[in-house]
Length: 292
Image (cartoon, rainbow, N blue to C red; front, side, top):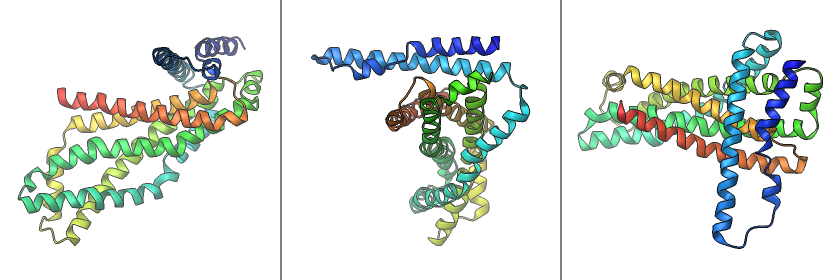
């Protein structure tokens, strides 16, 4: 009970400066500079709240790693299924589409130019490093991240979060940690599935276009262009996507008391911020690829 009280105090402090409903409902300033300053202030409050929420979540994950395993493990499996297994049919179609639109056209164009020696490095940069992870993160954000905001926002509006606290259950441990783990593992698995599917289907579509490149040469070039750094950064990048998408969406669902009619607007705001964070994370990893 003492720990629950401490966690409620930490959550209250984390969300105290992020309750921006009053600022959003206030009349817009008259001057452009005042309006810009107000938007910047709101952005800084949001960044502060997200940082505090991420630290609290990490602290709970480390402190309660083996606590209530019989209760948390089924929820983790449920979230992995929702953010991974249930999306496999959609990603199978996306892999076919990506292989047809990007991979096969690139292979065909490089052969016409007589530059098939650059095929491996091109596929690694375009598919493995960029399109595969980023497309997966954005689709999971749109599909599962939106559901997180709506579910948690509705639970907060109906008082279910307070009910969990009254029962002595840490809402971060019960509601947030399974979503973070499930989304991180789901995005990693779906990214690998998408990359392999796009590369294989891309060669099949290229073969239908009478490309003379054999499967052995095609996959040998791709394997030769890959390095251990690509595998390490791919895993780190996808886990970072999953972690921060879960943090953003769960934060907006729990950050402040909501009315039911406000949940949809908060979901739109969370998805927008999630897209921005995904692009920023991708930019950070592009710099890492360039400096290593």
